[in-house]
Image 1 (cartoon, rainbow, N blue to C red):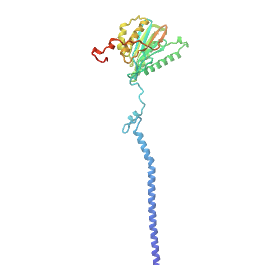
Image 2: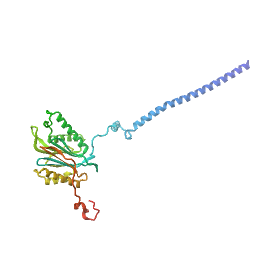
Image 3: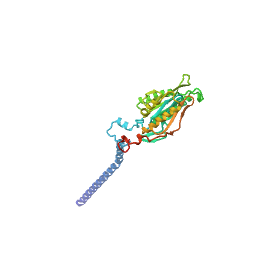
Image 4: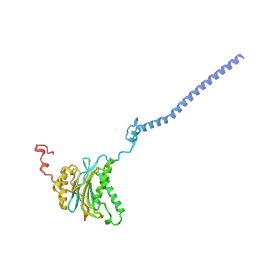
Length: 322
């Protein structure tokens, strides 16, 4: 009995040891499975956190926004400024003169991209209606905006007219267009978003009964809303070069040919002296009988054999540069 009991105890101990070893193995397997489960489940979380950090740290253009205030982040993500902060594609001088039977404007067809002569056939003299003509120097895109605005107003006047016949519609006269542009320019300037143009308006005034007056009109409006009238006008570099020549040669009773010759001479001198000017020009006129007429672009004859152009500067034996 003693031997049998001893064998039974030994078997029980072996079973206990085996059970403990099995339980320990199960615990190890369970722990490893838990760890692998945790590591697998945390991979997407780490990835999501990484994406979140990257989205917060980078804005459009690669600008870092970490540590910035909410207002700064909103400013960075806001739409870009749509205002014209400085003129980019620009046209130079526009000249205007009154003569016996009407008003005449002249301008070249060059639009410069900075210092580069970019567009050589840009027309800057526009007819608003049958008795009003507009020309402008400065930013060409703003001139296109002004043109669309004036054409929309002319179409509105025609559509709301009491008569269906074009010759009986009550079109805006030149002074009304000039006054309207003065208000537009001042309004845009007050909003710190000016139209970068000096606009010359030519045409005829209007009688109280709506008919065209015999008095010609010539006025200018600049980008801040300053406006005035005169018998001769020049914008851009022409205000320094051409305007003194026009004052010297001008007469109120000038014929159309004399006015055109004077404007062509001024444009030719501007081509000599203004590096943003071109000898390809346009002439436009407004008369009471014929209305608005704008010529096709044509080139002026030039002469470069003047002594001041050929001889060296100061006759000092240099390379001939000015």
